[in-house]
Image 1 (cartoon, rainbow, N blue to C red):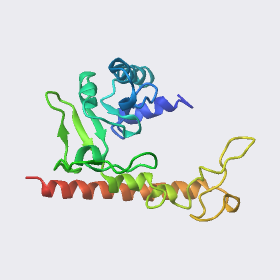
Image 2 (image 1 turned 120 degrees about the vertical axis):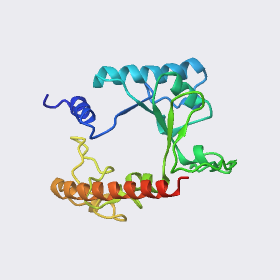
Image 3 (image 1 turned 135 degrees about the horizontal axis):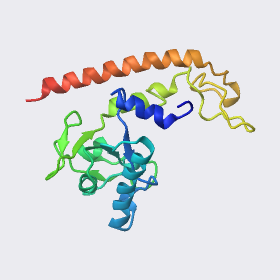
Image 4 (image 1 turned 90 degrees about the vertical axis):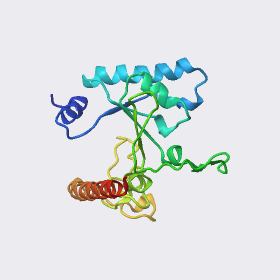
Length: 213
């Protein structure tokens, strides 16, 4: 159906082009919720809402903001999910990084690696660790694709329409110096970045396979 974005994503998922996953019902920050029942309902209703929108059961669960504490993976497993994704520090240990509060806390190294898969004990839930270098490609405006000068400038918005008509243009200029957005040029750059990212993932998978016993 025209203008049916959920239907378009569902079609791509059925074709095996993309993998759809769900998350907590209201983007609840699960480690900070006071009651276990609240966390359980966030995870359970996220599944229900996904099924209503996309017409199929979700296999994966994404923790809002990648916020995790030990034990949450068991909750996800109990709700019938096949996999989840954890931040590198949750898998490897290390020093907490934060713009707010205490960033000096150190979690002892676990000996685990981010290029391996792990299974939640006593369940079939598979845990995919985030690989920091690959994540930076799609997340960091400094070292990744979002900062490319051809892409739309998120921070410059027309006060009347609410639309964004300008591109990133450069990394240091004022918002007043931003140039008009060119969707054709941005689409071409996106194809280049998609090919580059796929190659990076394939290379990382090959390195992991070579290091596996």
